[in-house]
Image (tube, rainbow, N blue to C red; front, side):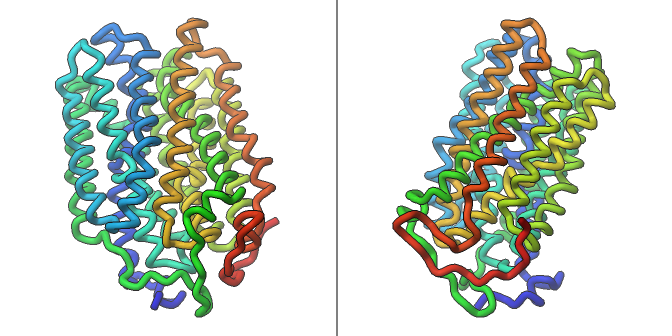
Length: 423
């Protein structure tokens, strides 16, 4: 049986070792390494090989599209075989793929193939790989546990851009790719090998009442799932359009390369605070309202970024964008587990990651194309990225309270309300 609330709150509770594995695994995963260091390499690659920024940005989009295609299969495998058997091979392949970038040639196809491979295994190294295992260990502290895992991603986002920029400055961009790939293996693999496992008997219960899981068909056929998926897709378009070009945006406006890297790192620093607070809020308030506030903060951050012409303004905009990033990987699995249970959590979460990757694939290329056409990052171009974050704020008002409905034709036994709900 699942441990009591008191046990979950104890530092000796075994589930926290799984959270520790998730923390370090996510810190050096695809979700931290690729989005937060990609923009640091845009100018060096363009200078080395003469590639246009749109062409370089396509590598990011290839990885995102591959994540979209591969995530459902990874989700099925995680539900079928458990996280340990899937995560460890994914980490090994991811590290090898990243290290292969050390030997890039002027033939851009090598660059694209490497990012294709990274996309195939990427989600197995990141939130998708660890969320199911953590959710089986926690009920009342599930929001905090998931946010603690995601805090690893925030630490990675804070540290890895600085590591990449310093490595490029001292050793060159080739060595920087090798250093990042090596870190991913040395830090991520051992913790997953030691601690990553599911609760032996994973019962999703509250106050002794077992929650009935819905079928995959019922979940995918419900408006609840599609609202969550659309929200994730639009949010990804907003966030990744900014992340892929943030360093270039600020340096083109007179900010130094080290200052731009600091702005990218600021996203990680404030995301660390935001995600921990998000976890606490999820365990106390209605998760949909928490998500809406985070999305609104993202939209405000995008508007401020469009107007940023100094390091101070760039840091402030980045801090808002980072603070709101709890909705990227914490809120989504939390809502899915509350609405649909744990049996198909990895599969459902993987489908939302497909939606996320689809949104993430489009906006970096669009922003790069607008730059190549206009010759600069116009404020209006960046302000467009605020809309995909704001629209879901309104869309999510259509979501019911936990357990009210799955679709117009199906219903399921809801777990009793276990915390106060906001709004």
